[in-house]
Amino acid sequence: MSRDVQLKERWEILAEKLSAQFADGDELKLDAIIYLVGVQELGQYHRRYKKDDKLDLMHIAICRLLEPYGYYEFDYFDYEGWPHYLVKEELPPLKAGEQSVLMKEAIVNYFVEKEYIN
Image (cartoon, rainbow, N blue to C red; front, side, top):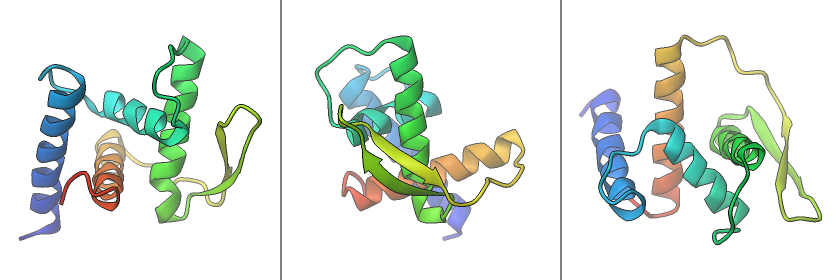
């Protein structure tokens, strides 16, 4: 099975499972899943987030998701428990479709690592 086919299948399984768990079956899009990763990484599940917090959660998620690719490195947790990352390497210029594929691959790998999917 080609890498692209496997990624597509895993992404569909993951999106369906997360949608059932967090959105009453409504399909979660890429941004919503990135947000969920941010909440997971922060670990503060039962609080309301302001708009700026939501953007920060997505930033945390992107850093964590791209860390295994060598783009970011965890630095420290601040006094409120928020993780901070250092930029190790700038992301190369990517077209929108390429960004989407990279993020989907990183998300699938993250949830495989967390043993949420196979």
